[in-house]
Length: 360
Image (cartoon, rainbow, N blue to C red; front, side, top):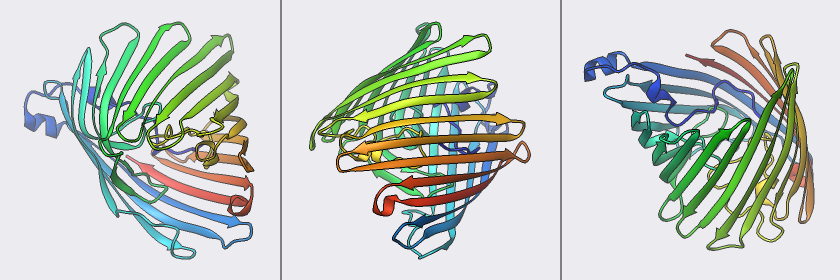
């Protein structure tokens, strides 16, 4: 659960269709678009029975996308992060001070999009930045087919240390993802992932979101299984009901992984952003989570809250997340998040974080 302007879900090839075609390379460069972000972030945790932890950091992101030239675009982007202070000097460890997280060439056609290079993915289990080749087939009515290969993954966000590109297994990972929206209010999304010497996992997600006057009612049913090469096989189940009225969205859900293998490696390339932390969902064997929450907006304010309780083999964890955001201008956003974790040892804590983001 995160409120931030800098981490908006982005379609793989959204930037390739933003501009009209240029006719020369010079025009494509001159008509390109620059985007950027200044990001100030701070967090502090009060941990029961242990020393406090926390840090403050600054981040600058800069990107450039050329105009389209005969359907082709070039996209580059980089982020630099720096810690200004740390409570004990060890909380903010990053592999790189700056990352070229985006560097790709894309081709867009009415029936096919292709991106080659460093790019941000937004699939069911593949998020963050990847070195990948991705194709999106749009030739069939109401259907989007995504196929791709990714060999390395990186994290390059403003609110955490940078993690440079690292290999995915020995040979990378392949993905095939299909989304069908030909039935009113219903979206069906089966998928398959395969990483040599790691695992193969497959699943399907169904989302229903219907309008009934002033009410919106929806739900999600999501199930995935993994066939692990070097560990016990795993599985993951999500069931969620939700509704919207008067601009407030409420939801109630249940998550469960396998009693022997947990979620396996299903969450290796991505995660569910239900909780601010919520690490036990994927890391613990036989984890079962009930959660409920709400979010909405009023004028320039945004707010959200979620509470969840996770029981797993050998323990229990409760987490409460409360967040508020305010758009000071169209480009300047302020937000704060409070997290209460109630578990054992280091899992019993209070954390407060705040951020200021200016984007252009």
